[in-house]
Image 1 (tube, rainbow, N blue to C red):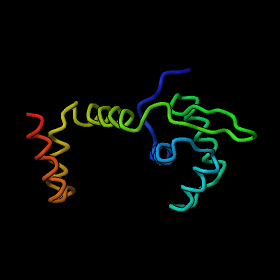
Image 2 (image 1 turned 45 degrees about the vertical axis):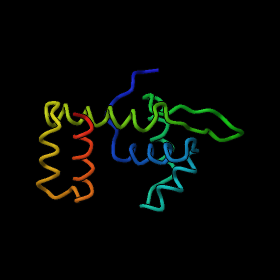
Image 3 (image 1 turned 90 degrees about the vertical axis):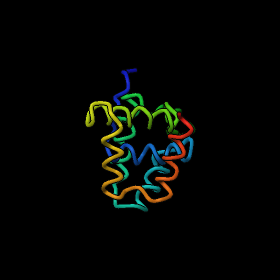
Length: 124
């Protein structure tokens, strides 16, 4: 198996969300979940999931005639790597400019700000 690439496309992240939510999912399961959100072809989902398996993000087993996919990493670990990679690429590893941007663009609600403040206090 090739080493996992850290970068996931938007579509791959959508697929991962469905797989993480369900624990196990067939291509049909993912297709049905995604087509509620937007038009998408079954073959697109199938091809993308095969690619994700080849890149080490998903693993599959065969049940009858269907392939059942499962995430290789739990959601929290994968998201930690994705966020770290993003911070490294965009902000030279620093979280401060990202937080400043979120605050300045009013992307954090009062509830979010309180939660962040509480986490900072607990970390000290």
